[in-house]
Image (tube, rainbow, N blue to C red):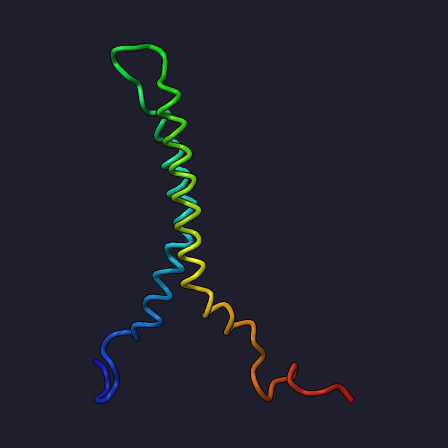
Length: 97
């Protein structure tokens, strides 16, 4: 049971950051699944695959994955920039003798 004055839920910023990290981890899995889907397309009326539509589909999925990765990276960039900055008063902040 939470103490009085402590929030019951996580802060919105840390919750969103964690969900973005989860999305970044799942994006390659989603890409593999989406790229594998044209292999499951078998038109019943013809034996030859529709390569034009399949090619457009793969190109659209490729562009969508790039756009999704861009949005996720943009959302995580403040967090990653903050992790790279040295802490004040730490060993890297001191000048060598």
